[in-house]
Structures are given as structure tokens and as C-alpha cells.
Amino acid sequence: MLNIKVNGQATTLPPGALVVALVTTMQLEGKRYAIERNGEIVPKSAVGVTPIEDGDQYEVVIAVGGG
Amino acid sequence: MAEKPVVANGAPLNIAGREYVSRLLVGTGKYRDFDETRLAIEASGAQIVTVAIRRVNIGQDPSQPSLLEILPPSRYTILPNTAGCYSAKEAVRTLRLARELLDGHQLVKLEVLADDTTLFPNMPETLLAAKELVADGFQVMVYCADDPIQAKALEDVGCVAVMPLASLIGSGMGILNPWNLEIILDRVAVPVLVDAGIGTASDAAIAMELGCDGVLMNTAIAKARNPVLMAGAMKKAVESGREAFLAGRMPKKIYRASASSPREGRIGT
Image (cartoon, rainbow over all chains, first blue to last red; front, side, top):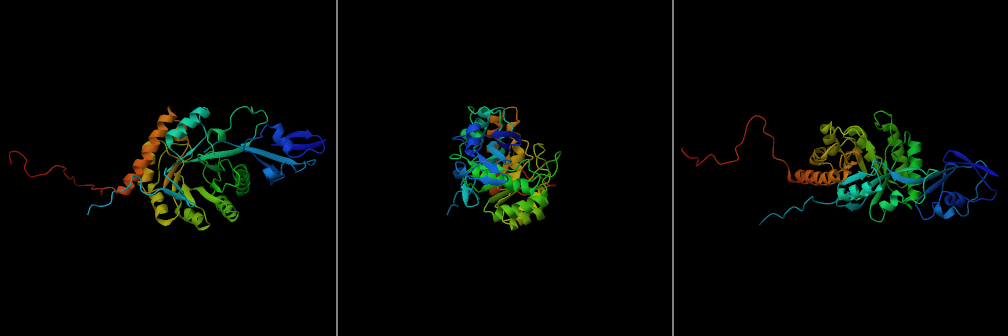
């Protein structure tokens, strides 16, 4: 299994998973989101081809109300 | 020949080459719910709205609408901000995520805070972040201290607008140092918008009467007893203040009154 961190929380995914798995798990399809993998942006066009690796750290963000 | 009538509010606000009729920019935080957010922002007439960038909550209900469905980028200019960032590094990272989230959108609000109690800006980090963001192609509107030297430095590194505080964020204390704002207006060529500290309509009007190009506020509307009504009041205040600035106020006469009615023709004289 792949041990990763998403938004600070530890989680596991099956080997071979792609970054798009995060989008599906968080039900973000069709919504505006952005993903950072180990400090680097993963463009939306690349989420379907970027493999998740053991030890990766992800930030998955959306826009919320703010000043 | 009669003078050409002045168009209400004069020329539109131009930020980074784009024109906006409304000079009131509003935040989207602290509202009771999305309905109130949407109604207040409609009443404000704002065309530019700020949003924050935050982690998706694992437990968040995905069937609930998201903020950008309530305030679609097709209708509003979304201004992602870096509120809550305490270093240049965090701020730059946040805005790169925002750019990806908004499909390459470049206009952003930079805010690097120094202190939890005052939310005063950390100017050295703000300047560092501004340089890096400008080099990376962002159009940076920057929250800053009401310090003319710092404001000018931010313009010099390429910020498209400087946004000095009127008083502390969310304090509602109004414009505490109009003289500093006047020096900034005198020294800086890019648009100057008051950001933070507005409490009520007269504060917004004063900012505009000073010659500011616009006003950005959140709490003054969201935490009014009736946010939608206050949003409308702020819209009018910004317009009134702008028109008063363009009209040019009468000179103040401190020690001598000036009667409005003619002295001649009074009965019994």
C-alpha cells in the first residue's frame, strides 16, 4: 500500500493509484480545486497521469469565503 | 458654451488594464450562509470579490454548493487572497494554488500578516512575496501598512495596486490616519484602495473623498445587523465619496461664517 498524507492526514491508497484518485475520493469532479504534490502544483491536465508514490504529501484546496 | 456635464463617478477604476465601474471591493467571509453572501454581494454592486484558499475538509458534504458556484468567475472577478499567511513563502505557495484553481487567473491580493492580535502586515515579507509574484507573472494588489515609503516600494517592484489599511482588519475603527493616506495618494501612481478598518458608510465615503481609487471591506458588511442593507449603504457611500472628490469640496473657513442668503433687501433696512 502507498502511505501518503493528504491535507495533513495520513491515508493509504492501493499501489498504482494516480493523483486523480484524490479528486474522486473528495468528490471534486466538476468543481474548482487545486492540488500540490510535495510542494509542486499538479496541473489539472496532469492529475490523470501522475502516479502517487509512497510518502507523498498532498495539499488539496478550494476557494472559501474570506476577506 | 456650457461645460460638459461630469459623468457620475467619472472614469471607471482601471486595475491591471481592466476597467471596473464599481469602486467597492468586498470580501466573502463571515456571512451566516451562502444565501446571505450572495444577496449582500449583489446589493454591494461589487465586481471584484476576495476569496480565501483553504484545504478541502475530509468530512465536507460534497453535495453542498461551493463558494464559486454561488459567485461564478464568469460574473465576478475573483480575487484570491493570502489571508492567514505569515511568510512570503506561504503566500506565494497559496497564490500558485489559486492560479491553478482559477485556470491561470493572475490578479491576486497579497497579504502577509505579522501578528495574530493586530493582523498588522509584515512589510519585509510582503515586499519579498510581491517581488517573487510579479516575477512569476502575477498581477499583485497588495495589503500594506499606511506607510508611504513602503507603499511606494511596493509600486516600484511592480504591484498593480496598493491597499493600505485604514485601521486594523475587522476592527471597524474607520480611517485613523487620513494624512498618511493623502501622502500615499500623492506619491503612488497605481490605484490606491483602502483595505481594512472600515466600520460604516461614512468611513467609506471619507476614504473616497480623500481621493482613494476604491475601498475593500468584508466585516463592515458581513457583521452589520443587516448585511444586505449595509451592502447597499456602502455602495452609495463609495459612489457619494467619489463624486464629492471629483466635484471638489468647498474650502474650509475655520473662523468666519458665510451667509447663504443675500444681505441686500432685508425688510426694515
